[in-house]
Image (cartoon, rainbow over all chains, first blue to last red; front, side, top):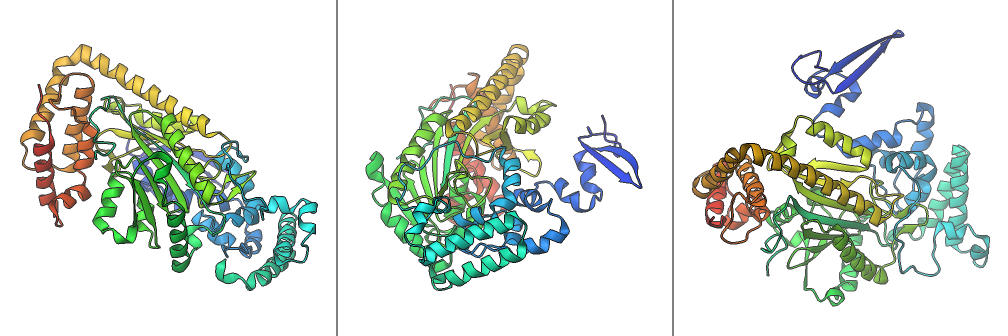
Length: 190
Length: 344
């Protein structure tokens, strides 16, 4: 099909417009599409489409507006990356960000990667007392040093995750502050 | 010491080179984007110290350098030789590079991730590149505990690398296939197979030299071998299709093909000025001519070496002073006149 605007090039963009319930379809070539105004979608046709922007769209796109303000408050206690920064840059600040933002992004990760579980190589060498969040969840491991700041951070982190899952953002904010407080002492090497 | 792309015994096929890159992070530090200058320096000195005997692993000589100690031109030349990528060049914080003299193995430290291991080999040798990268990975891992998650695998700065942290890439020369009408549509369709293809050189939408890079799109949920096999398969498939089109054109239009190749050679041998676009187009013609046996070079010389040679930063480096556009075109022509081997 030829582009309906220039009638020269092959149309490769289908644009569907719904105005007051009336649906109209248009077919344009990439060049004409670029020259026309599609509001926020215009960027798609601007030559090289920055991957980060595309990802940001994917990662943050489907969150309803009213939830957004709550989400903005979520901050990784280890590196200080906020959810907003994460969405804008499509970039994790540290390994712990994966845990902090996990519930918010796991669907998007599945969309982006087509999977959500690693199948490939595993590190041959791993330090034995792994201060890993996963490991911390097994009761036996954390019991011995329940009062240590690390154990407390893990505990609050678990609560934070749970609160996020339940969409209880006030509780999550409290957990986040607790974690920040506990981390406060050793912020320098965070 | 000849660099990987200078080695003359390379087969002159359509598949120029294979690259495997692993992204890793040390669990002790936050990712590079969150490190302060001081923390970056501290990380680099620890990584540098831990990896100083890397050569013991494979008996190779590694040179190491802080990227800030190199000139801007050196860094851009390294980008042209596919050691650094553009995001690294823009990054301001301290970074360092460990690299063999042949430039086939390189490690960028504190780039977009703490450690990025890259193995680059001529021809289609992804499995071999993966094996080498894997060995270096284990060596690094024995000294530095990796950020790893049971569910998400190796944790990387970007969600596009998580899981295996691996990007396998094959560079293919597709001068005939890329002229086809359906080629752009085919490139778009490749996403469905889980690979992405992009033109290597060019400006805007225009491609110079018909070189394309095929890489795995996804990094999570599949093993390293599955991913390299996929890229391998697509590269072979495209190579075969390219050969089919070329065989057909040789049968039907041999004289025209020969004429094109020899004209390209002639222009490069005698021209006084060559733009990047022209030089890349002529070299692409020569590359397919050598591959199809239409022309034989007196000395074995990988055409890709010449393609790397005529890039801007390399020409500026050779001339030892900044060159304007006109001068650059002259330097490019001069480079080709002197480097192009004779033909039989």
